[in-house]
Length: 513
Ligand SMILES: Nc1ncnc2c1ncn2[C@@H]1O[C@H](COP(=O)(O)OP(=O)(O)OP(=O)(O)O)[C@@H](O)[C@H]1O
Ligand SMILES: [Mg+2]
Image (cartoon, rainbow, N blue to C red; front, side, top):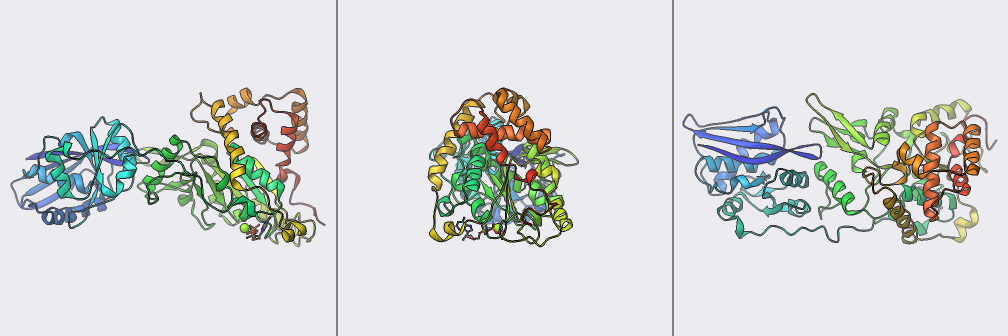
């Protein structure tokens, strides 16, 4: 007898339909799985046999052929355990099949027949809804995550026996309620009030959070670069519902959802400098999102940026420009979203004191040039805000002059973001000033003649590239938004130029000499 059960395989953050066909027929007892299963799917044969028996059913001592269709899609992972087991039960007459075709099934089986969670349940639920199915059956632990998807009834069940019982009368178990309310939370983390002094760096953090700009913090050891960057999550604007669902999908595929199954605040990722390029941008034979995609809608912080391997830093260029990562595979390419702001922190030279007004730098010009070359030109060209973080003044350190707290700054950030939300309602891919394309620049960043003269002079004096000039305009737009000004004024251009430290601070010559 033949049975078909619906399931799906993850492809990036999408779910592709997979039909599990099971044929139980006379012949020597033998179970074969075909349809490009990998070793992990092959292993499920033994698990399913034990699970079926321990759940109180009979594993047929016949010839069983299991086909995962379509045959040209590689399938991996244990999420096909449940649909295969249901197929075996259906094909051997132990399951009510009337409602079987209405649902998508996913779940890993334990030997005792209970269901273990799978990764990507939210993406599978979205897939089920796109396939027009009535519902999805997921392991109990995946319930809250799958229930985030609207337009599909989610049932979260604990074991194979429960699924079999459910199929006798699906009405008996009500679907989980959608739980997208109270989704958004404020990021947690250290507070900006603890930072003494550093007005320029505080301003840069606020601008970065407001417009989604990339930021470079350059400065001597102990000046507070790491401290400042770690306080960025606390002032980032709240996630919108769409953004929260988007990020949750990515974390769901990566198997990194927090215990409550939701990404509620903007991600802040800080990988160690030993990270590989593959871990940063994503990949693998079943492609998983990398750090850049985990930072989607949030911030990727690279502390001690010069310690990262050069090819790792270079690999950031494409996602920074495109807002997504393209992973090419023999059969098909896939993309992961990766719209993030990058924050880099580094010392300005090997000894750390180049540019410090009080301590003399001991490095030679050659050493400094080599050191700077680690942060490649094309990468720095993509950084909108570059500032020098000097050591706080003695009176600031000792007399403890603290600044505003994160909640106050975040209110201004939120106000600037809501202006941007209005501005970009017609272009769904752009959410903040930093993501504007050239058409957006022409439309929203017009300058008066004084502004044009100032920018032109700066481009000439600092030998700026066209890309850098565009980036200055975007920062000026954010500064105008923070001041609730519809026009970009000369003072906004002037302040945006203040955030271009690198062009003024070249490794040759001794600033502090
Ligand atoms: N502006 C500041 N206000 C309050 N504390 C500060 C400030 N700057 C530095 N500190 C103190 O100094 C410590 C070291 O700062 P931090 O680790 O951020 O320096 P850094 O610039 O990242 O140095 P490195 O270049 O060595 O990584 C902080 O944990 C904090 O206690
Ligand atoms: Mg540091």
